[in-house]
Amino acid sequence: MNGIKNKKFGKTSVLLIVGIALGAVFLTGCTEQETTTITIKGSSTVLPVAETCAEEFNKLHSDIKVTVAGGGSSLGIKSVANGEADIGSASREVKQSEIDQYGDIFIDHVIALDGVAVIVSKTIYNAGITDITLDQLKGIYNGSISKWPTLGGPEEATFVDEREEGSGTRDTFMEIVDLEETNADKANSANSEVKQAVAGSNKAIGYVGLGYVSDQTPALKINGVKPSAATIKDGSYPISRSLHMYTKGEATGAVKEFLDFVMGSEGQAFVEEEGFISIL
Amino acid sequence: MLLPRSLKEELIKYLFFSVAAVSIFIIFFIFFFLFQEAFPAFQEMGWDIFSTNWNVSEGQYGIGAAIFGTIIVTIGAMLIAIPLGILGAIFLSELAPYRLRVILKPIIELLAGVPSIVYGFIGVVLIVRYLQVSFDMLSGYSFLAGSLILGVMALPIIISMSDDAMKAVPRSYKEASLALGATKWETIKKVTMPSSISGISAAVVLGIGRAVGETMAVSLVLGNVMKIPIPPWDMFESTGTTLTSLIVRDMGEATGLQVNALFAGATILFVIVAIMSISSNILRERVEKKFKGG
Image (spheres, rainbow over the protein chains, first blue to last red):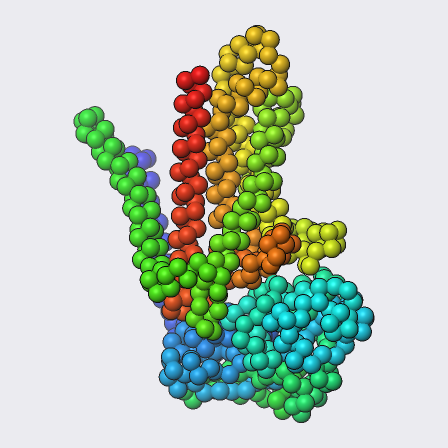
């Protein structure tokens, strides 16, 4: 008898659980319909700005949820083209090859300016290498200059750090320094990794976003111009770029609202907080 | 419950057969997929795929530098792991007092369970820094750092499995040897080692397999650049890449023929492992035959 009773109880509880589960699914379904989700994917350079802006924006709008992911500029552009993301962030402009591949569907929103700073190990900087020309940079990265004494530095080989393919920082650097191929010693997957490699060495050179310059990794002047907000805004610092958020066609609705927020005074405050240069 | 015994037996047999068949099918599909995806790269590029000319902007995908890196790092790792591993196993199984063995063995086995990213992290923070400062290397990121880490990662497998193999040698063999007046070392060299050689070579193959296929730890300390050291004797100091790190680095960005080139890399990796495994089997059979015949 007891066994049978237990079995019956088992059936009721199973029904109950299924009911609760169905109810939960139904309820979540309801709330999801009311919230608009905006997905941003792309550049690791834009990532910190996008994240802080999204966080603040989500607080202000209970009906919109912005989610942010990295992956690199190329992925951002690919994702917005195939609809995986509403906004594709990139630290470079859309390439002609991408327009050929996906069609002329991209609308550009410049959200910030940034300079690519060339950093060296502290010992190199202290030994007197504080200024470099674009030609010398080209020589270092294509391998024709492989020792610091060529530039008047200490008796050491150059440990050349670059970024991996797909990095917008790399694309900007390569284009402005006029390089097709490099002969670097280490390919890094993030700005912070370059910074770490350069800081940990006594003969390294690398390039990073302006926000990653520090005392341990001092930035060189390029053709006599120091990278700073002022020199990048007035265009005198040569290795600079703008940061972009791309949409597929004109932005509308919640996406437009978010972009306005980023490009407005509040968003631009976050841009400066993250070490970039405001467009305002 | 009411099934006749014979039928039940049959059913279980088929169940086990189908489970075994599934794993064979999975391997077959992996084969097929790898070769299918790699084929266009071989077709398009011919022998150029083995060249060292890797230039994405020009559509040149020669993976020679990565093959070279894989071979160098694996050889380096084995130079470290095989002697240390086998000597460690001899100590553990033949020489260590029982109490020490009981403590050491589980600790060594625990080493095998450390996630590779942890080895990689330690490599970046300690080994790379140490090599740079102590040997005045270009950066410390180097084939040497990769070999050291992989060697350490392969050690627990080689020690633990070789130890098991030596422990499995019948006691009577060793006793007979000692009774004939052989010393402990002679017994190890002429009786224990030859009888357990199949187990030891299996351990070494597994260790090599781990070294060849390891990705995370290596890509953290190698530098990930498609480069062959010039001059060649700089091989341990210079940075480079392996097939695994190349695939990890580029798969997110690759399109078109580059994807096929990465699959070609995976296929070559597969072939390297297969050749190693087969040649070790041949070697093992030869040694066994000789030992049993003698």
